[in-house]
Amino acid sequence: MNSISMRESNRLLRESNPRRSFGDGSQQKFAVCSSRILEQFSRMIEAYMETPPNTGEGCRVQPPHIENCFTILYQCINQLIEMREALEDE
Image 1 (cartoon, rainbow, N blue to C red):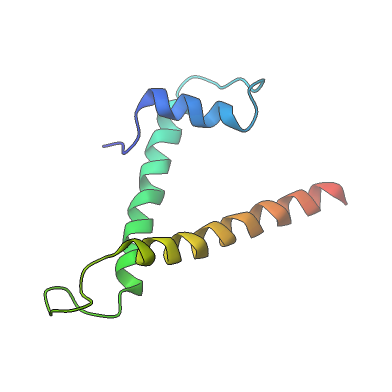
Image 2 (spheres, helix red, strand yellow; image 1 turned 90 degrees about the horizontal axis):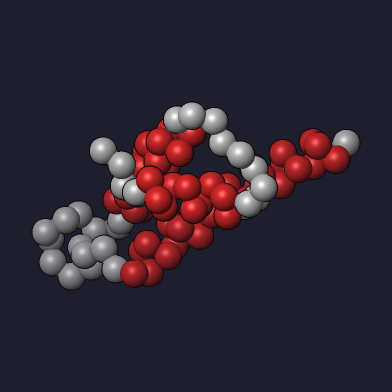
């Protein structure tokens, strides 16, 4: 099951370079892989929760929990992109 639609998959793929073309099955594969990343993101949020579920105060996922995990993940992805770009520049 995909977390994003094929329309959204196509939009996201074209966002970084509208002139890029994509082979058959690329949008579907992107939707599947994106969904897997979202699943891992939700696991990351749970891993970073300090209070066990259903134990009272502090056990609910709140927007700051999501934002903190997003920041970590986003920085990691940016570092990977920057490393790749640096290798291309050499």
